[in-house]
Image 1 (cartoon, rainbow, N blue to C red):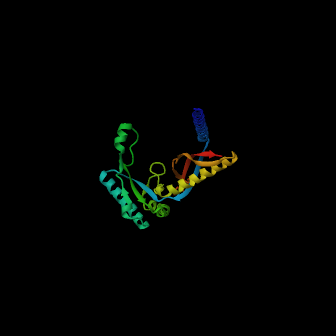
Image 2: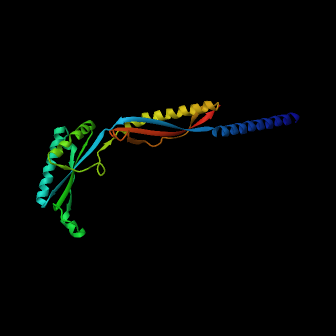
Image 3: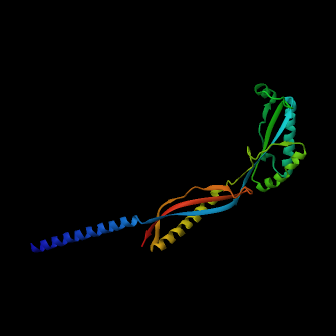
Length: 236
């Protein structure tokens, strides 16, 4: 009987000890899960644009629609010939419908003096190509069109030339790796200062990729940037 009581007491004591250890371990794990640091990692890279969109707009004027269309066709042919001679392919070139204005109709509605020509038109020829270097070189030669009598429109604000980078998916993996390593370095420095060590990742956010011109004078060079936000556990 006495032996049974002793055995029962030992069992109860053992259960209490195990419960205490479990509670202590749970408390330790809870405290450990609250120890983490949030850091940001940065990756930047300069790349060359791989697509250029070059619009060339021109203006013509005439007093009858037939003559106006003839002028449009003639200027289109001149610009197309220039582009082909520069080395572009016909498939690179597209044409937009001209925007036309009847100055006499506008004068009747708004008053004012009669314009020298009744009809005005503006049309655009757009070159879309992956040969960015050729576009850059041809832009310097485009002034010769003015010498042939064409009236070119200012494209700097309405339809400016565009240089684009379309291969972001090819550089994404490496840049995410770079940003993650940068974040790890920041977390390691923080851990060293707090006499801790960096543990596993608690939470990670990739961040947003941005593509911008390196500067105003070289829009064909792009800067890609990504910032990752990562939380690391800190351990003793």
